[in-house]
Length: 298
Image (cartoon, rainbow, N blue to C red; front, top):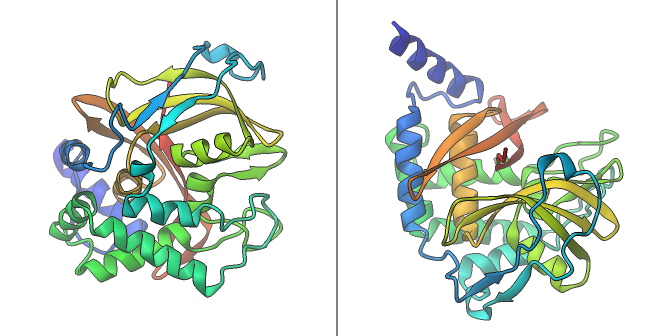
């Protein structure tokens, strides 16, 4: 009876998110697929391509102190070879497209739309992107790769309003680029954006309150930092993962466990991914935009 109830719950979850497929995705399948995606992330950084200096570890009770406990930058070395890979280049082209303060309308010219399409297509040209699609296709959630890409585009790049009814935000902007809302940093869960802003002198790394158990990349850090005068108390992110890996893991969890904590397995280590749906507007047949997604830390 419990198994039947679980299957019914998962089916209803998919339907409520706007996915009509009468298919369920079990916790075990999510863990198995995430392990496969982890192994297929051939574009992840190696320890010679990316060198970080996490410095001071603080307790969870100290995260709001705003004390700069680390005198050196977080990033010591990032290889230009790594940044020149197609998915990295496609992501980097997107990160300067946004007005970070909520309440300011986002203008999306045709060039930026093309950059979105290029990013999504480049991710689908990787083993990670193909594996995620093949799994979701096998579950009947998507009938074609083009349908999947179009849904990712709406889910991640579709605009909605976080302030004053203006189309000022998207899941991609919030998670990958970061926003400023209410005088604080909101979102900002991508290591490449951290690196770029630190390199430009716009980001000051303070400390970390969580360091994942991984000894190779991708790893996970829960960080404290100041972004051009605005503070982030706990900003968690994969470190050293490829852009396609971040997109795939977050999309997997959002599609199968929208608005919930989703447990993945990476190199034999379990990690919670927290996702949130944007409930104030929708696209298609009632599908919800992604509001946020990030690695959950203690």
